[in-house]
Length: 172
Image 1 (cartoon, rainbow, N blue to C red):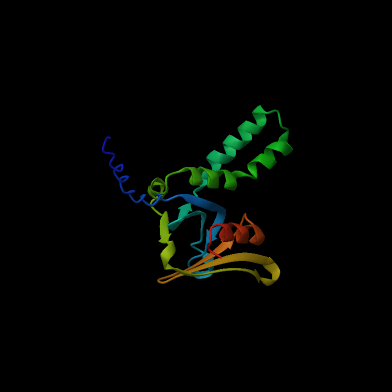
Image 2: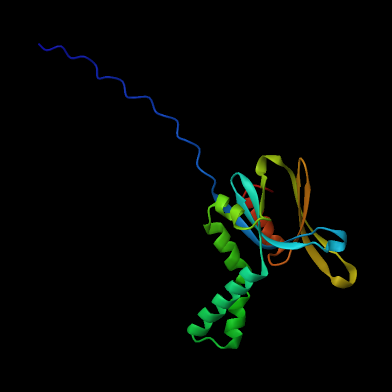
């Protein structure tokens, strides 16, 4: 009879490293209000990752580039001027899609005024509609962190859609 010894134990499982930073959602056309009466307000795309919120600044040159590309694409498809106008309306979302496709660190390096907020520092997220008398209602998003409060105006995305995006990213 041969001596059968038990098989050696399997090697211990190595802990899997935490996944890298991944984009969860974007909110296009966020106006970050600043300065007296909002004089220093700037447009951003809010890129939500599993670790940070990235405020990617929108410049006029980027917007013109995307609008031109969308318009030329619609023209090549044979759309009339109304069709080209409808295509141009998607420029903010097209820019947000570009931001979502980028590496978050590359996105931050793209413009010197881009910045990020660590999700761990967020203490409160609030969505509301403010009545501005003659100017009409305005949808706002306020993000409070341990060090600062960011007051944002939703210029492209509706309050309802923004709420769904934030809930999906587990911020609401």
